[in-house]
Image (cartoon, rainbow, N blue to C red; front, side, top):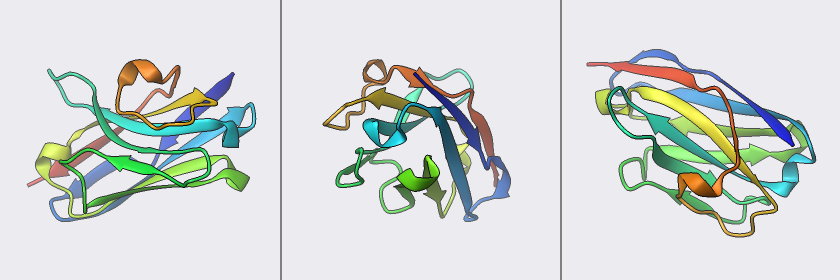
Length: 125
């Protein structure tokens, strides 16, 4: 079992930047593939980015490609989401999710068994 805690959210103006962090505790963090999802008010939770266990593979939603970067530091049991050129439509609660021993990163919510509580990101125009 792994516990996930997100941090780094807040209020930022359009074109600004934020860096989210997901801190993990429990089992060996390097055994987990990790993803970020987000959920805006009245909308379904959607995939943002994912990273494989050894950072070999990353995946991004089309809406964030070129603006967001996912990375991880297994020594610090952490995954990060660097968000640049933020837009008002990026406003959402951002969730960290993990799946044990997953070899291939996916964009499906159902593939990730462990979830954090989320951190709010608000982008003003």
